[in-house]
Length: 342
Length: 290
Image 1: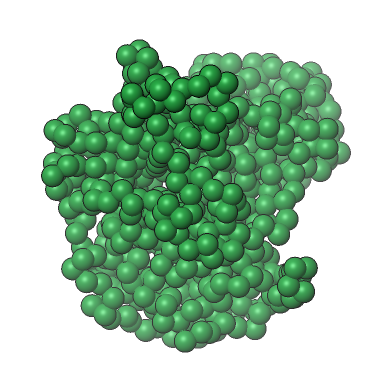
Image 2: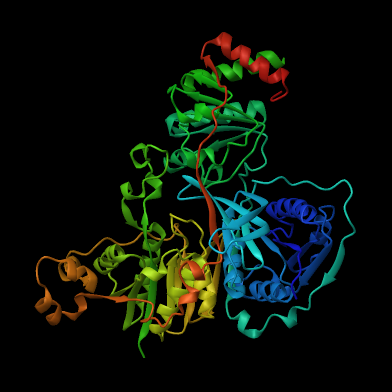
């Protein structure tokens, strides 16, 4: 049966909560559903999902499906894909959105292959629009524009799936807003019979052991980020950034070059291969501003660049450019912030 | 019974080093100016596969790549580092394949190599960064997948135990073969080329490459059949043409834009005490900080 719904796969975190990216997708999915005058459906696969079902309340889901069974947590590719692909084969929504997390990027391609439909990875933006195909003189109405960086972040491509349904995309964490509705429609909850979908053949890969580290560093939702690049020069100078971050109540981010040089932990990396952030204030210190980096922070509300090179590309997107070294500028920022907030 | 390992590799433009010289005057990427390299995570995959080969007596390691004629370079590279044989899947009809069509082509080629026990591939290729082809090949072969592998803990002729990277930690999984494994960059780096193997395989060529050679190598290739890198086209892998290339690709590129960041009106400030004092006051007054 084909329907016109928008569908979001909600991912369960190690702690049994719902992943932020899933809530971001529900927010976006609701907007798309409104634009296309259709319903928003969502599926959660895991075990003991009562809490998770509460967490997705208020995001505008019309119908929530739960696949709840002890074999479904922790995540394993085969049983999860058996349920999701089976469910989608029965329902064929118009659009399927999945977070571009390690789990989503493991699951989505397997589903797309099974359903023989198109999939775009790591989208940073989604829009609805039409497409005119010259060759067949056909106009496709209301397609999902799946917008993603490509070619190492040097270009942005808009991908469409004119013919196949569902139109599937994985979407990067942090690029879309997460927002509950003031007035959400009533959410109907139904459960899925797991045994209808999962067979013994889906359980041949077993988990022997797991080591989960609580995430110590998480810059994703910080409102103030002091970011350092290779130009910061040393781990010692990075300590200055930490000092400023502590004073301002923010955290430290880094470019890939700084992470590769060992100045900062990998979890702090912003950009194409790191996290995407959109803080109130982003102070870029000694960061030249390669496209890969800018892709991860250009949506920051205010950007200050501290750089000795007046022609650093990052200056083009900065609200303020300070010509100077990290060693001279950062201590002054700390000093004058303290002085002015006394 | 032989034990067959297939490693999927890809030749990619080195997108990590797109410098000013790699950009054309109109601001687009000049792909021709980028060096073609062995996709980095495919080298991790090759190393992991070689370790399994080393631990299982009589195991055979085959590298498989899809691409233009030039992609034979990555097969030679793999032969220098320890692969036993290489196949280049190449056909003009493959042009424009998205990940679904690509995984169809690769899965048809792998089926020709049956019986196989393990498929290895890099997690993702740096030109597309999709990480889709590995899992899609696994689905098309109807075998389980283990993604983001970091280490093979144990491999026997019918079972494998793998340590894999998670978003927040690691887990060890165990499964019956055949399994498809995608390898993460945190896995061990690939061993270097071996001098002996370079001597042995430096003349390894595909048939199309041989035709372009000035020297006649016919005799050499008859004496040393291992020098032939097999080339497979659409018919060789019994593929249906509507499932590959543009017609087999549900995703279409509607638009490509170069990243152009619109220039903001940037206030340039000196690093003097006065101007930084001024800036901090402004940020506090506008509630950006404070």
